[in-house]
Length: 582
Image (cartoon, rainbow, N blue to C red; front, side):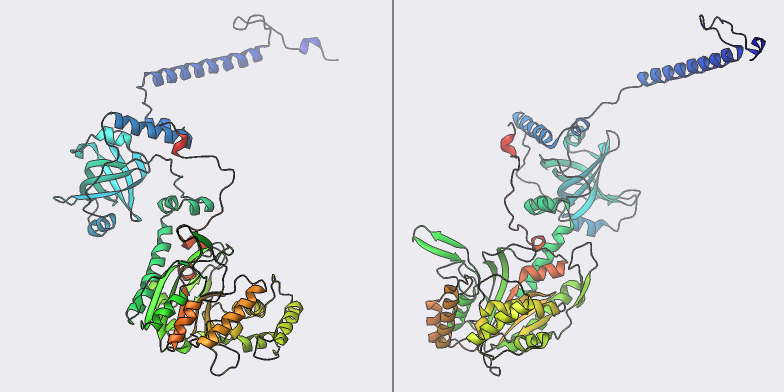
């Protein structure tokens, strides 16, 4: 047991009344109190100093940062209505632009850092994509127009033609503005326009997505205007598309082809094997079909004496939507009298390889076939392209021998049914000879053609508008060009025998009665035109959308269509001006 004399003596100290403690504890507690008092005094002094500072005014833009998109839009609408109530015009009719942004960059990018082009002025217009303030007397804007960007450096001292504070407190990201001033470069080398005049031309009522861009794919396709606004690289795709069409048009124009337009609505869906869209003409009380191909009209023009003719336009097919198919799509078809499919193969190699080289600067391109996150493949468009004869190619790939080259026989149909079953090829009925052949070609021949290649000499049963082959019985003089295993072109020596053509149409009618709703109907007017005489002719078609996908490096057809077909949105809350108070 410890001696009581060894225990510390407890004493009550005046600083801590009613709390007996040892001397060491007293010293510890006293020091702690002194530190707390010092800290409290320091905090009080800091708070007093902060209170003495002039308070920073919170701007309207600071307040708007806390609003949700609907509140933001309502607030912007209120501003527009307020301006109108004051007699102002928030949407002026005209603004004079004397220099486009691209021209501004080209003309003034050579200026030295920290200098201006004295004595010169430029008037530009564009959309504000960024706004930064340095106090109340200096604002920096990123102005974008035609996919190009310049900086606007607005200094109150240079604002001779407008109310500086009023305008710059009113501007928001997304507004379209007109700016006139002196070109120059900042000390940091940023090409800028130093405005003497600044005008809001169109206020943006909506809150723009963040600075990282618009990433949601559904929104991008449904609201292409916003996609183009936020993702500058998207416009490059459509410039490539335009360049493709321009190149094809020039190639054909230089060879004396005449460009024409043929009807979009037809009494018969002819010219291809596809399921059409159906519409109705009220005044004539007539069912019409949106065209699936312009072929029959164009060949009638050749009969009439226009020996070289082409059309670039929309086709409509009521079929599936997937990564490479859209219900409406763009093709180019041309027809040349006194040419055959050998001539067209040479023209195809020349046109396509020349186009790739002109647009991409090389015959070889990198293509992300499996999407942007996977490694690209190389596709080589160097001519000549590989050629595969369809039937002999299938026989070689499958190590088989068809009973005959006449694929209209029951014997070949039965052989194909057994072969399809044996190979485990999945396909939906009806099991017609043409459809079974098409499935096998897709599985075993098209899959070989990553680099451009022709699949040639289709059986007559697959090609109701193509002329019979001069050297291979039962076949036609037809080819399809495949790139990255997808069809790009289709061409053949045209069938110009009206008797043979009617028989082919009859075979198609039988296929339609068997349930093949993609088979053709008989076009009596076209057959009648053949009876007047179609010269030996070569016909050719190109899918513009798929070619654009390759050269723009896109693996989804929706990326190369400005307004692709989309399923209706479900359970989407109503939005827009109608839900806002005006």
